[in-house]
Length: 84
Image 1: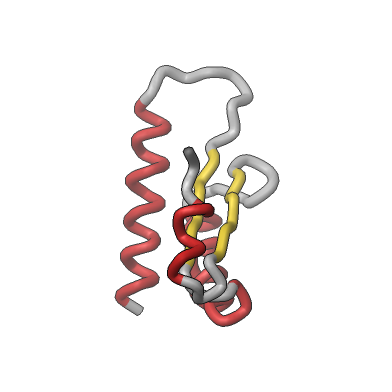
Image 2 (image 1 turned 30 degrees about the horizontal axis):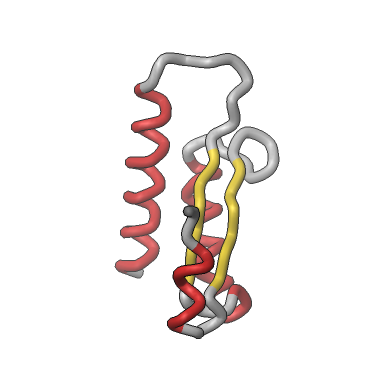
């Protein structure tokens, strides 16, 4: 439950920072989501994250993009997931 709250707070901060910038027409916010676990093992957390965004009026694929990446439980894989 605490993780869900932390993810929601992080999303709110990211979205707030984006909205505080000068408004540019038709620019869709993008969130990068990096996890150490395989996506299927944390699907409940991912859905809670999406639900929090929906409650704020954001629909994945419509007015927000989420780029999902997973290290599949491999510690060494984290580096390749991060943007250069």
